Length: 199
Picture 1 (cartoon, rainbow, N blue to C red):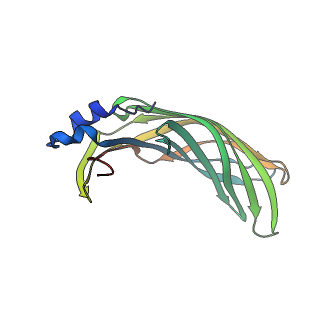
Picture 2: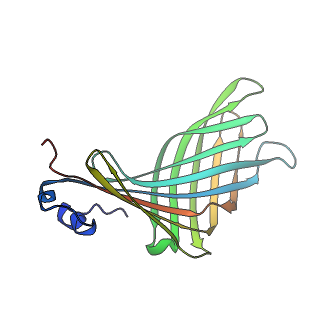
């Protein structure tokens, strides 16, 4: 879940702001990412054929300051390339990046570069990440044109488990795969203050 703090709480976190900052504009944006490589047997692709996909899930603060989530499942194998067009997903990342989950559906378009043909595709998945390394923390403070931002970036090595099932009906292919690798979990927060906006 993504939490957007109120102005008073946010101002208490930032150091050494002048008294007039009580009238400041405060933004508290968050971006979280999970990522894994998935592979499995390619149904309809001939003996021994396999597919590979890169799965990315994102939880973030949208332009209206509300929590949002999206995902992509992009496939690359043989002469086939599949790109995500839309998603309906839930991303959950636990405290200190100990665990994370991504579940839902993506849809998009597959292209056969050898035949210049296309197919729609749908992928359904439920994946879980479990931390394997220590929590790494990076903090920076920047000031630009009177605006001050504190950025905190957390990362943690993890492994992924679960399944992904997909199909491209016009091509007659699809399959079910499991994770073969995972990128570190990422949690970034940008807390910014613009003192006395409009003055």
